[in-house]
Picture 1 (cartoon, rainbow, N blue to C red):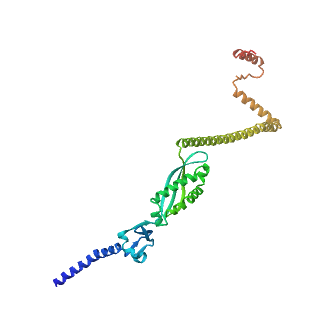
Picture 2 (cartoon, rainbow, N blue to C red; picture 1 turned 90 degrees about the vertical axis):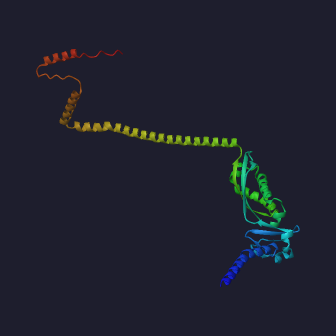
Length: 311
C-alpha cells in the first residue's frame, strides 16, 4: 500500500511539473521556430528576413506561420526580425506655434491632432522617426498656413483653420504610414506680454467707463423721477392754494346770509384776537367817559410808541 502511494505521488508531481514547465517550454519552442504566433488586439507583426519583408499580420488571434509566410517562417526568428507595431489611436498636442496676424500681432496657436498607423511597413521603413516627422510637419503647416490671417478670423474661425492644417498634412503623413484623424486648433493667444498688458488696461478702462455710464444713467433717471414728483406736487399745491379763496368765500357768503350768525362769528373772532394778543384791556363802567380818557392817556405814557425808523 505504501509503495502504491509513493508511485502515485511521484506520478502526480511528474505530471504537475510537465504541465507547469513542459507545456510552456514546448509552446515557447513552437513560437521560436516559427510554427505559430499570437497577435494582440490593435497590433501588427511585420516579419523581415534577410532585409526583405516577407509578410505582416494585423488580425488578432493565433496564426499558423508556415501557412502565412512559407518555409521562411522557421528561420525568421534566427536570421530575421519580427517588428511589433502598435495600431492604437494616439493623440498629440503641439503648444504655442508662433504666427503673426495680418495686423502684425504676434500670436501663438496650440493645435491638437489624432493619428494611427495605417501602413505598418511604410511606418517602419519609409521614415526613421515618423512620429517626430509628423509633429514637425504639423508645426510647419500651422505656421505656414495660418500666418498673415486677420486677427478676428484667428480668434473666431477655428474650424476652417483646423481643416486647412489637416488637408495640408494628410498626404505627407500617409506616405510615412500614418493616417491623420481629427485636427483641432484648441488655443489662440497673444505672445507679447506688453500687448497683453495694454489690452488688459483697455478692457479695465472700458469696464470703468461702462460702470460710470450706468451709474450716471441711473442718477439721471432718479433725478428725472424726483423732478417729476416735485413738479406734480407743486401743481397740486398750487391747485389747492387756488381753491382756498373760493372755498373761504363760499363759506363767508353762506355765513353772511344770516345776520345773527354773522354778528356772533365776528364778535367771537374779535374776542379771540383780543385774548391771543398782548394788549391790556381795561373795563370802564358805562357813563364814565372822562375816566376812560384818563386811563387811555396813562396807558400811552406807560407804554410809549417806538420811534419811527428813519427812511
